[in-house]
Image 1 (cartoon, rainbow, N blue to C red):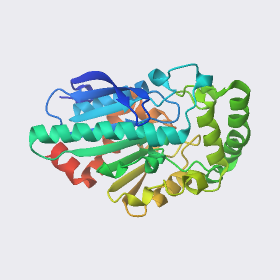
Image 2 (cartoon, rainbow, N blue to C red):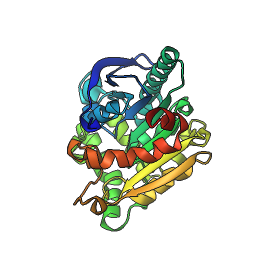
Image 3 (cartoon, rainbow, N blue to C red):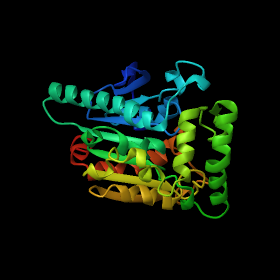
Length: 311
């Protein structure tokens, strides 16, 4: 069967964070046995529905796939956007923490039912990959896959894109947030929603800081990138000049000092595509060409994924 159109089950649920906040979430599950568990963590201000086709494809490969909306985004918004107090660190520590807990619990339940171990893969797009080192207990994952996940310090951009990044973090993001009470979605990219003011201002502050969040003194003691020892596979796309230039992805890779880090670069022209950019990696119509390429290296490098998915 063509696994880009394999059958799956969809189940909507909620995640409860350690502070009591509820998040909208969904499980895409295989019709047959669960062979692995995956959590898909979104980019900044992007709702989980954007990753639906990708989650369906993963379910067709045997993954039970958890996707979710950060607080203040998508179906996890509880009030008017200007009233949402979420910061980026809340998404990383509380929301990602709840997703990790749910994915780990599902993995343990499946292992008990099947009598054999299953792998847990964390997939992070942009912020969903670069902030994972703030997530308590993220070392429970067997492997990390980052797509355009980066250290978003404007100094890692080049040419005209560098000027745009400087303006974004120094002017556009903070000024719009103060003026409107939030950062509008059009400012963040075609797939983004409005961003709560606290999250926008923290993003702007990290983007202005040399070293991004990794040098924020208020996060010292909470950064745990050096604790992960498994495979970390980080991808940049050559035409992603908006949010994921290669030097910024390289800087994120350097944070995983104890991990088995692999860096991958995808050139749209090599696949006969005119562009991919920051968001098109998850478009349904490109999935058959892109997603096997994305998953194959990290699955091959992770024994529990390799044994169950390819065995």
